Amino acid sequence: MVIGITLTKIHLLALLPIIFLMFPTVNYASAHNNLNSDDQTIGNYEVQVATDPEIPEANHPFKLSFRVLNHQSASDIWNSFNTQISEVSGFRMGVRIYYNDQLVGTIPVQSFSKGEWSTEYTFHETGNHVVDVDLYDVGPNGKTLTFTYNITVLNVFGNIFPYIISSGGIAFIVIVVWAWITRKKVKPKH
Image 1 (cartoon, one colour):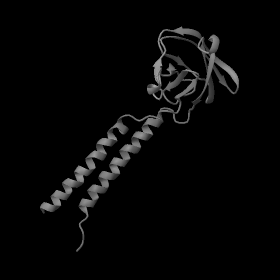
Image 2: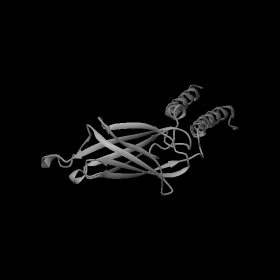
Image 3: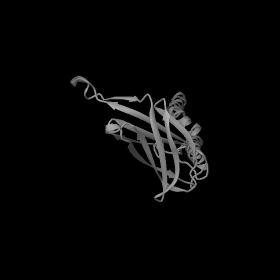
Image 4: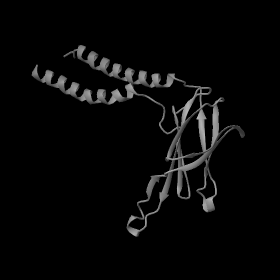
């Protein structure tokens, strides 16, 4: 009798970490974090682009974020493998957005006093959009550097995607608990 109770406690203790690991998945489910996040480096400058939500929907506003970094190589040989990455203190940038090789939108050239900037934007078509980010006055001899990104816009999942992920996590927990409970009810025949 004592051994049976001890084994039950061990099974329960073994199940608890799995249940606790599932809570973050059930409470917050989202699409792949890097689907519409990208970065590109030209020369010493890196521009990072991200969307929030990760999968924008057509005709729904979303947050389009930009971050500009300046890679500066280290000054001595000991630090040459540790390239310093830092946000620029300010930049001038404009954005051109294409769909099927046709210009469908622009964000006018603006100056920013920090290394990050976000704006709200709306795509009107599903599919792949090409976003050209022009970073002014940073190239050789003050030329403009153009960074190109692809942003996918879908209507397939919409807002149901997080619920699908959450229900999968809940179903997993229900199946594990059901198997554990029914295993206890079935008595071995000797």
